[in-house]
Image 1 (spheres, one colour):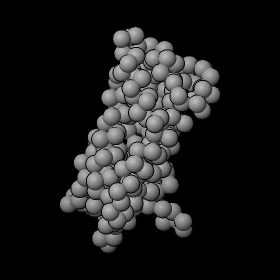
Image 2 (image 1 turned 180 degrees about the horizontal axis):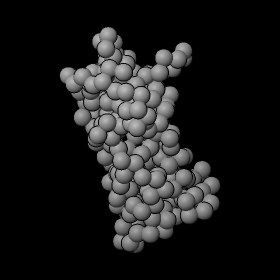
Image 3 (image 1 turned 90 degrees about the horizontal axis):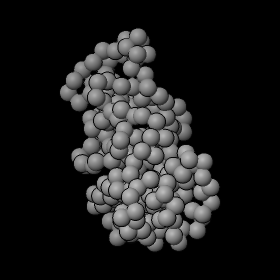
Image 4 (image 1 turned 120 degrees about the vertical axis):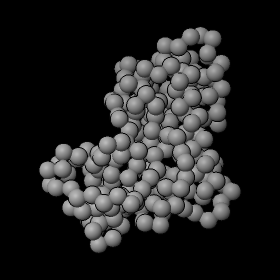
Length: 220
């Protein structure tokens, strides 16, 4: 298999690909090449993936926690077949329980900043699932295959934040709480979850106000 990543031409054998193999997703097959993850599109009907122009535009945007394409990948016929991203050296998402409250809120604020950047570039961000979260000490969202460019929309940032906040409150926080085998049903009523979260993250009492402000912000 001969591919071109940016300006670099590579010839990969079957053994190379087997060694580099990481996983398969809705967009295609994922390989690791050094500090890069390569996403090669599968040619199956109904598979959704980023078109060449979308991947190229996303590669121009700088984000910290929402992983975007870096370089486009072409086959030996110069046909677009995928893209590279930074490789996230993922450890178990269960390790999110090691984050303090301050570290957790700092991570979420970085994601908020990415959402502002993407909204400013008219990118509609969707597809929040636990399968698309990687954790290496920081929280990263992968798999931009369902992201779309939209025309000017003054509600885009609000929509992007709402979808992320819904995922945060309905999925990520309950998942984290379940690691300690706690009942997370109270999250259905998000009027005041700060005491439980402070206790869960085992953080100092003087930081409760920090968390209360955070919870108020994401559940408004």
